[in-house]
Image (cartoon, rainbow, N blue to C red; front, side, top):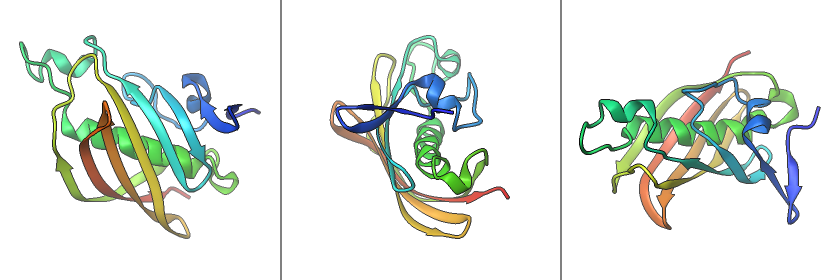
Length: 152
């Protein structure tokens, strides 16, 4: 089974290929494409934030803003792609173990393209840590350190 393809020598994924790795499905699949993947190390992905997102109906009417917790979730999903693409973790589920040092610097609005980068900085058995950064137009909107555990 093919989990990804190459573009200009880099591992990339479309949404259907992402679904072969992540168990998430709409409306909670928050990664639209992977633009760079280093298996077991790093994932750079994109989320196209459109005005039809379910959460904009209530967050906030008349001034839609993507909830910070969903930006963190999108970063975690990018990290899960890097981790679950490793052969020994294929078909497993990665869960949050913790979130540290989360900072929200700018709002994410409809029409934004959220660039999600999560680099796995430590992996000990089925536990690990990821350093995450979300950007819009090259500007940092969110940073966090994510701890995760892979279900056995």
